[in-house]
Length: 157
Image (tube, rainbow, N blue to C red; front, side, top):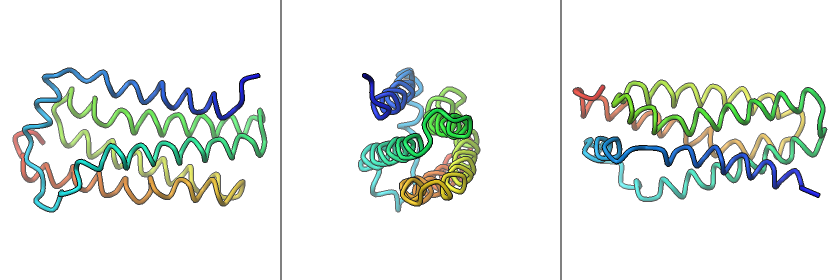
């Protein structure tokens, strides 16, 4: 029998693979952008996002296991999926549009969805809500960084 954590993890991985659809010209555009001097941890960003996605999937698993198959749980699973799609959309959409402003808007939207999701799961499980905190802490940093890059790269706003 397929376990719920396998389905949740599988969906998370499939959605995350969509980020690999970035064309090389889009990657080159992003690489050439100037970054804030204080952005010394850029190499750690993939690790940070991996931890965030694992925490998010674990949170979804906890919520699912509390009330499997109910309409409210399916709605929360939809919100988890929407959040992941928004998070994953950040890079391909920003790079395809070559617009840091689009990235900033997507980042801010993701934070709002993440906050709503956290508040929605809090009554169900404090642990599930706590596992979303890494995203709530990191998302404003990434969004602020993108916003700062607009100032450094006004031609790519």
